[in-house]
Length: 178
Image (cartoon, rainbow, N blue to C red; front, side, top):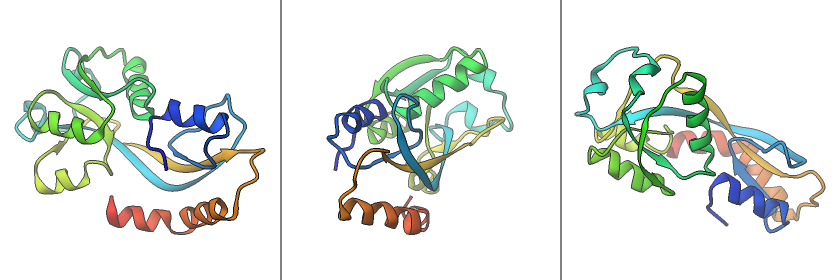
């Protein structure tokens, strides 16, 4: 099991160091088979006391010049966030970049900035009132978790079993735990 950002995972897959990848998107440069198995909603999150946490149906433009704590370059979450900002001509201030969702959540709870993360990652903190989901027009962004492998890869029985398990039971389990 390897936990890395999207770029690192697909580099390992390409070098035949991994059998399967769980990802939000498969890069076009690789000839992969992939199948969706669960939803992955993404949204903007703040500390509960942040002034933007009280806004309703706010436009994305409110993020211009706002401090953000973000995932590292190479992360699929970061790429999705940057795409949304680029499409809407938004220029937030990136004040921190971290490879860990847990570190990002702690920084946001401490009031160091806003973030954009999978809502499955912040489910428990939202429920406990430690974080607030921002009400932003056009969000949350709904993506899919996918299980992927190289088209030419002959999967071992264990990998085939894991893939089948994710496709049949992954969505139900992720809904319980995240």
